[in-house]
Amino acid sequence: MDKRKQVAKYMLFDALAAAGAWALFYIYRKLYIEKGVFDQFENIHIDSNFWLALFVIPAFWLALYYVSGFYKDIYRRSRLIDFGHTFFSSLAGVVVIFFTLMLDDAILNYKNYYASFFTLLLLHFFLTLIPRLILTTRTNFKIHTRQIGFNTVIIGSNERAVKLFEEMNSIERPTGNIFVGFVQLDSRNGKLFGSKLPCLGVVKDLPKIIDNNSIEEIVLAIETSEHNKIQEILSALDFRNVTVKAIPDMFDILSGTVKTSAIYASPLVKISNGIMPAWQENMKRVIDIVGSVFALIIFVPFFPFVYMGIKSSSKGPILYAQKRVGRYGKEFTIYKFRSMVVEAEIEGPALSSDSDPRITRFGQFMRRTHVDEIPQFYNVIKGDMSLVGPRPERQYYINEIRKVAPHYMQLQRIRPGITSWGQVKYGYASNIEQMVERIPYDIIYLKNISLYLDFKILIYTLINCFQAKGK
Image (cartoon, rainbow, N blue to C red):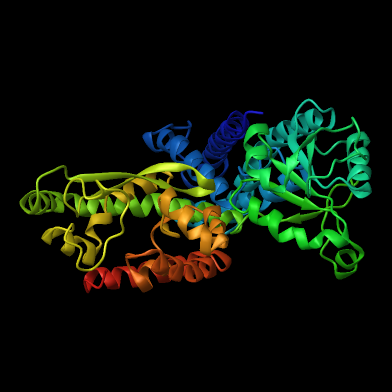
């Protein structure tokens, strides 16, 4: 499945619908609204504003759909969800357009406002909804006929696991799960599956199994007596971009935690691997990009002074590049203004301290004010990092941290950041112990992540920068 191609289809038809709705509305307004105001108006005049709007209006709608999360999980859609999302986003968007572009129009009476508003709303809603329903219907048909699906692995080899596999594999309207194998909870053979499904390994092999088989969904099918294994399983999945579901027990059903919309399939509890609501996650990304572009524009005039400061302190390049580990354990290259002498780690990885002789005089100033981190705005624009998030570390130090804090891997569920709660409180870490001290604050951030918390961390970071309190 090519998700990008599918998203591109939705975006193309959404853009065409937005442009078409605006063009039809423009004609309606000229013929029925302005005609009554300007009696001398005889022909529809297409001016430059009309052509400009044909580009600006669709861009506005696409941005609104992106922020609201419509283009996320594009293969896991239903026509009812499409209907509801299209209606409410159309209503919100038309309200914005009405108050920004149409409120000062010349009209005969207030009824023209109502006519304009509802005409644009209905045109945009139906022109957007119809192509979406067609695309979603075609996609659902391919899923129900097993033409496309999501590679799935079952964790467990007991009777419940076998029964679940047989039921999901034979239902009248499949939910898109393509079972590629099962994972055992220990080294015992999964005899109950027989030749129905291959054994891919044990729990500790999960990261490799996910990568090698392009797994998108995991179903937990374990007995009550095996619940002590859940933490081990979830720890192995924490930084993987997969959907995790589980067979509910009677307590889950009675407590109301079982939520499902599939009529034919077995009810499963979805263990959310999302951290923020879709709209907040997308808005966070928008803020990252806009904020980073804005910051780079502001700091560009100061680059010559930074250049002279670095060159006067020591010989070598201006920028320093280093491999770090980001979201889902993927490596990326981080960029900073060089604050240390060249070949500072010629003897191997070594953390810096307040009195580190490797740090240049100008480098000390940059670290106190965080000026050395300005190039990381480029990392944010690329998508490697966020403005706020746990600081990215090198694989060497991650391996050391995991020895004393295995839960550190949870932090790889989100993009690393230029600043973080732990960074604001502790600054640069001088040793592994200080790295570990920051983890509780980053975990708390992970569990309470929100745009509000991001703004608070950014404000305190700016205060530290202006007061040169960075460490």
